[in-house]
Image (tube, rainbow, N blue to C red; front, top):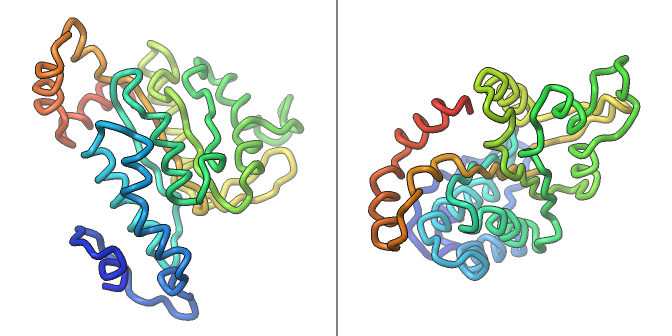
Length: 239
């Protein structure tokens, strides 16, 4: 109720009840002001994506209004190249953390094998290379108090090998869904609930191939934008 009152608008957002000994972030005027400006910040940076802005705004508001959280927020952005997915990740960083510099872009599309995956996250303790910091940990260290990690072109991870893609995505989901991630380099434990993960993918781009009319693009998008169709598209791709 406090959150909706602060926003001054009617959003379908559930605000959790009070948690014992945990101070609500909505008692902090800075947080409330930042929440109020989320839709404006996203709309200013990402043009022509009103539905995406609305959905992402609601997810951020719900996340930032929680007194406590046990998991990171993950947002999956799917669409044609050049429609603002990576820019949305940077806009999220500005809206949630005050600066687009709180976003780090990781080239997940370059992960085409198990060894590439290990180079991103680090090898298991005892294996060759386990003593070297990797890109994922470097991204966490860049913003130790939280930020946005953009998993750029993650839909290309694993290439055309559907079984490998499915295997790598399961490993990725297990990492993101756990609250804590332990560095294989020094056993330092990072709290991933302080971060927002933005996954970008061009899956479904083939639906728009050969279409040059903006009106026809819009029709095709409306015909395929339902949660069920998008989920089926990703499952079919091995994601």
